[in-house]
Length: 349
Image (cartoon, rainbow, N blue to C red):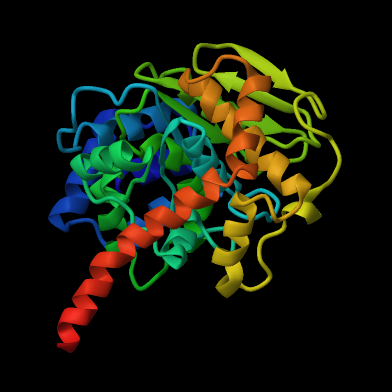
């Protein structure tokens, strides 16, 4: 059994970068069998190791990445959560659209569902909005719409190799590990990142990891209701990678009325796109609107687009109630549907 797996099982000392390098080398040349790949993922999903081991793991993956643009995308924020909290509609995806409609430059990363009925990628697919496939395309999409949804290219290729190695076993059983580390795995030249941490994620370990991130402003948000989003009806804490911490209390910026029943996902996944668009248009109830606007405000402040939280909430509410947020989503899906429609028409001729 590989030393990386033994180190995870024994938990006596951090697993070093050289050990992880060896693991990825053996995975890449095919000398690591399926049983060992499953053992590694099972160990990580059962109990996340110490933050030093996780830092070495992340660094060993980062050094294998292809080159990305050296220049950062100024004023751009990535929003991605750990998942695993109470069942809600895709709040972070909605907040991304609302923030972008309010003038914030947003790149959204995410995944298919591991612990929910629809992950952000599943929802976007149903909406007919495509993920970008390169840094160049992401930058172009960001310039055109003020928002982009980055595809799998931002994640280490070794994760894809792991998935192929354990096949036909699904990666879904390992969702806890993938959700927790996913926000640290995406490689984007943004200047800020907001990551919601649910009660099911190891906040202490993730805070330690966040403290080692120096190339962007990083906020980890948590609350006393266990969700990986800011909630108007909860006390929320924001932890920054600079070591600061502040609280957004229940009712401080938006009303504290409501609960998770007001944030429930669509009953039928097939109706999720219509429900999502109703959220963006402010037609899914006041609690849903306030929640999305509070999270959009966090993106505006973290990115430096605005400095005043109350003004940020107001700007988000204007984007929802004035129709800009829904119009942005409908514009993107319409633009991306046109090439397919033309291709279909040409095929029929």
